[in-house]
Figure 1: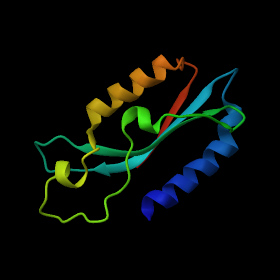
Figure 2 (figure 1 turned 180 degrees about the vertical axis):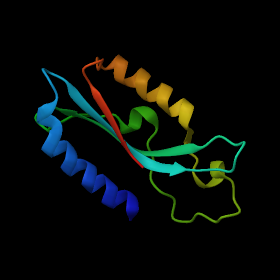
Figure 3 (figure 1 turned 45 degrees about the vertical axis):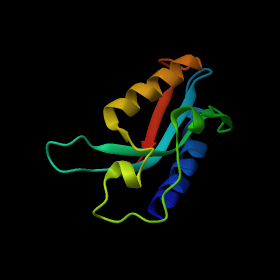
Length: 118
């Protein structure tokens, strides 16, 4: 429910602000859930959406499948591991690399804006 509310808010922000991106710049929006872990363990991010918008607010590409974006599981027992409950969750450092790589392959560079919703 919280992710859905944040996604709706981010969509509103993109629609309102995309026109401020210069030239033919794009807006990339990565949405998902941050999974914080105890000290000494890597945090994870479960990507649920990855969309690129033109500066008129229209969706240019949906790249969710390119990074393995998933859906929330129906059950998340506390004692089970992240890998069991969130098999598509990625370590933050790995996710940043994957997103940057995919954006570069699709021609998005320094004039593109990347936003995340947690």
